[in-house]
Image 1: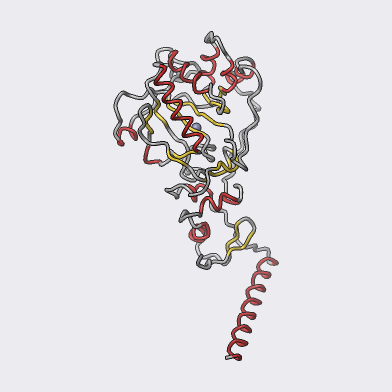
Image 2 (image 1 turned 60 degrees about the vertical axis):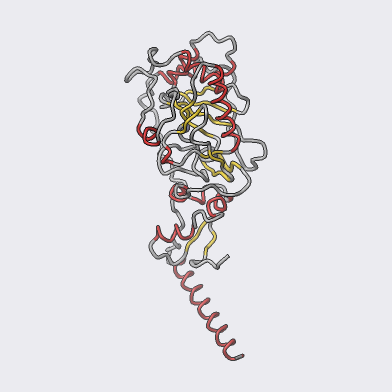
Length: 331
Ligand SMILES: [Zn+2]
């Protein structure tokens, strides 16, 4: 018995040394083990359910994840969620509360019949397989500039109906037969809540808002010009209290943003303008460390399994610089 034990521990030591040598050889040969560079969107895009943890937005809007997400119910009295097949009606409870309040307030005001809501975040946030650089921490939401119809849309209609552009075809100006004072009031109200950090909207729509004689123009500071965004607007909330590790953006510059900064959007870019570099693919290692727990908790995605399946048959898997055993012990 004792000999057997000594024998087996000897065998174990030997195999450990062989493994160590093999690893060192491969390092010295310049062949560092393959890194776990699975795109984070492939991991976060797979999980259908939220992480059962305390609600928390982790990281920054375009580099983070979401614990304890809540769903926006797909049909409320004053809102309907579109494109249900995407499963992106998840957010931090602060975002869900904001959308419900906005929907109810606009309906009560009589200016707008209710909201058609586009993408919020995935059940555990994170990067998405399609569209959006941001929307990763459950504090961003897209709201259509098309009013809610006075009936409940079918699931199929929510897939098929297209939003309507507010712009004249091919021009950087709003089409006044489409963009009305009701749209402007909707945007003003959406920006008016203290928890709103920014609203992104097409520069032509921002200009149309600037041209209106508002009694109080302070909301315009939060309305930020951005490309696209002429079928919908994008609301971004500040980090909610208690979301440790959530990174706010700097506040918008002071003023209503209707002057030179807005004008710059309407000038053609200089001929020698540097080309925008493509954004590097986000990997799990480039997100906050807690996002791995968010991904894996309660039967989410097994990161090591996903890494292996994307690498064929790896000899070693490394995540965040930490080697992971190929077969993980049962927990
Ligand atoms: Zn958006």
